[in-house]
Length: 140
Image: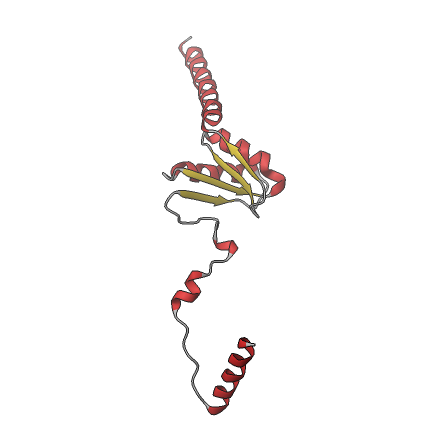
């Protein structure tokens, strides 16, 4: 009932030529859409977010490297739903822990720092072994 009264009052004032009342900025700022929670490069004090829309592992590794470069404690990699496993593998390969989410945010998967670092260490050891073998061949 109260809404109907307000509506008719507004219509009547518009007919008389009254100007519209300006809305304050506080009203619009209070409402936040669901999409603004995590944008691809969201600037939040604790969270670094990178989104990858392609299914290629290379682009996921590049995004994971960007996350590694950020000094924020929480790292989130947004990937397509079909590529959740690839996203986890990319984070492990780079050697960072964090969360892998699908683009809509309905599914999440956590990569622990310990498992990511272990994978990165074994990869680094393999590289040093091959370098040592190359230098031995050169010396002979």
